[in-house]
Image (cartoon, rainbow over all chains, first blue to last red; front, side, top):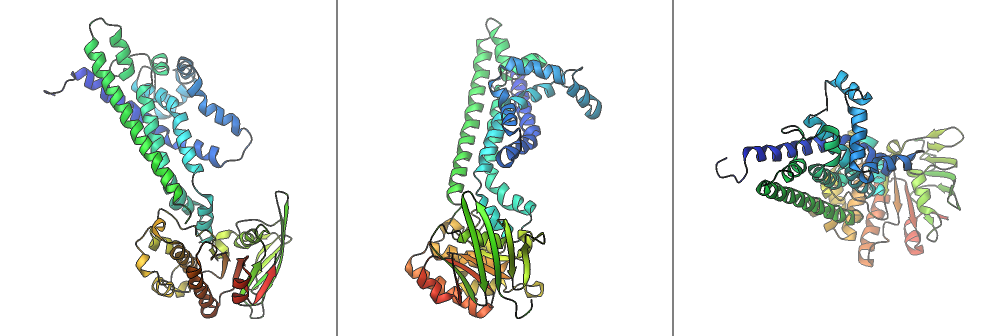
Length: 235
Length: 211
């Protein structure tokens, strides 16, 4: 890229970060939605505990989360063995591990946003759909999901932004490997250790700020749409 | 449906919080009105007939068909009761245009048990010019007419109307009242009608139940 201010290596870091973030939120979205649904609509013993567990990565020191991931998803961890055996998927020192760490750290934010949007759906509209003969599934597909959709998108964007910033759990879990796990924050941290690399740090930091800001703005706009949709529910 | 069956035969009770809701309704024909002050549980009775709220005890028959019988263990799912429920607050789907709202419960034309076609319903209610609009752009009277149309197009076996005039000004009230009278006289559907307005109930109903 002749006119690019970035070196090929820096481009690689940006692209890797985007890939890790996208895979992290994409792969964890079904789980996030299921958890959000359970927490919004479910009534079962242990709901508080589940709620706390989902939010744990938000308050736990990231290095602890990374260490727990290492125990569970490392080559000898139970989850790690299962994934390697059944799906041929390994995480150690690979970008998949970075995506897993990012997904765990982003999950609470995604669940929160999606849960709020499900709770904001007027149950009386679902009742109306049922009296009109809709099955539970059709009601979900045609009423609940479309009304909750902006919140689901907001959760995705927020989770994506969080993934781009993920540092502690990633470096603990899968280390700082160029081309595999060296995402933007890890690259910035690495560059800071090397004298005379101010230019690299500045450029990567600016990219981080720009991406994060764009994601937050997008999420904010989507949340606003939920608010408006809610106002229009009852005529 | 046997011809001598009552339109509505309802004996239900249900505890909601610290309130006991009880109703005994025998509606012979035309409009059966549940009349009483706000908070008497009239809407809860409609919800029980619709299948949205489960009574603790009792029976619900509409036009001779058992929808609910606590003792016999019968509790027809809400989708199978085919109530045309017109809610107090309209409850149009905000993300769907009027046309899609109207057709949400569409079960096909008369051959499949439908009462009216879309065209007939639209003409009957005078809502042809609204089809491409979103609910939030409708006035109260327009929204209520669309809500009635949506209920009619779901091929209902009876109508439940929960204070359908309460959110309207007096001009719109007269207009919707006329629509309901035409429903009563032309379609001959059993109608269970909730209101706290004496004049409205006396004008419409052939049976009035105090609640």
